[in-house]
Length: 330
Image (cartoon, rainbow, N blue to C red; front, side, top):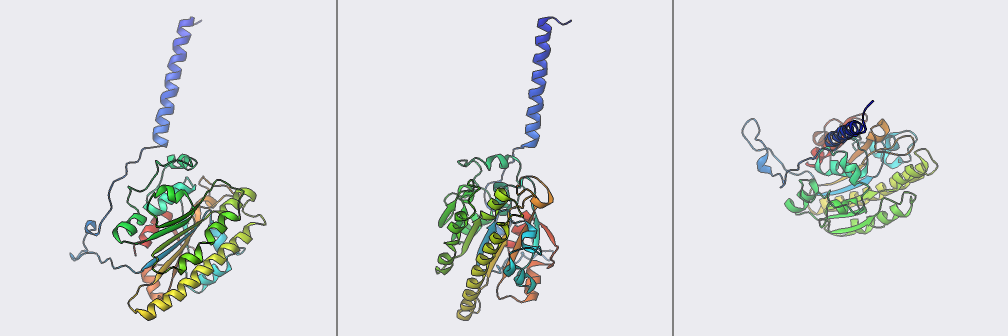
C-alpha cells in the first residue's frame, strides 16, 4: 500500500508525462512552418541546357478567377449536374476540365493558401479558419501570385466574395465587396452580393484581374446536404454566372483583337477550393471532400495552342490543387 506522499508523487509524474505527450503531439500535428520572405524573380530561374534563359513570355493579358466554395467534381462533370453551359464548353473543347485533388484540411482558408502560394497548408490553418478576426495568417509577406501580379507586373486586382481573401491580403485589392462565410443558412443573398458586381466590373475599361468567390453552394451543402432540392438550382445559378462572364469576355476579346492583333487573350478560371462529403460537410480527407474542379477557359486560341499551353486535355485527368500556379504562370 502506497503512502499518501508516494501516491502524490506518482500522480505528479503521470501528469508530467501526459503534458509532455500532449506537447510533442501538438508540436508534430501543428508544426511551425517558416515562410521565406521576398518575391521570386525571373533571375532565379535556372538556364536551359543550352545555356539560354527560360522564355517567360506571358500568354494572357487578363484574368477572371471564379471560385465556387465546395464545388465538388461531380457537381460539374456528373450526369445530374445543373451546370449545362459549362459542360457544353467542355464538350466543345473551349474549356479544359481537370479534377483538382486538395489535401486535408479541406476548409476554406488553407485551400486559399494552397491556391495562391502553391504550398501545402497545415492543420493550424484549420483552427485559424474559424477565427473571424484573425490576422496572423496574412499572406501579404509571402510569395504568391496576387502579390506578383500587382507588385511585379503592375496589375490591378479587385475582389468580390468571401472576406477571408480580404484578411489574407490586406491592402492589396483595388476594389472589394466582402461577404461573411459564417451565416451558413444564407444560400441566396451571399451569392447575389457577389453577382451584382460581375457585369459592372467586367464593363469597366482597363481592368486586369477580377476574383469572385461564391459561398452559396457550400451553404446549401451545410444546410440541406449535397442531394437536396436546393443543390441543382444553385448549380444552375452558378452556371448562369459563368455564361455571363464567358460571353462578356468573348466579345471584349474579339474587339480587343480587332483593334490590336498583338493583344493577348483573357484567361477565365472556374474552380473550387474543396468538395464536400455525403452529409454536406468538409474538413477531412474523404474522396468527396478532396475532389474539386479546375477549368481554365481559353478565348481565341486554337486547339493546338490549348494543348501546348495546358498539356494533356483529359476529362479524368487528376492534378494536385496547389499546382494551379504552374498553369497560371503561363
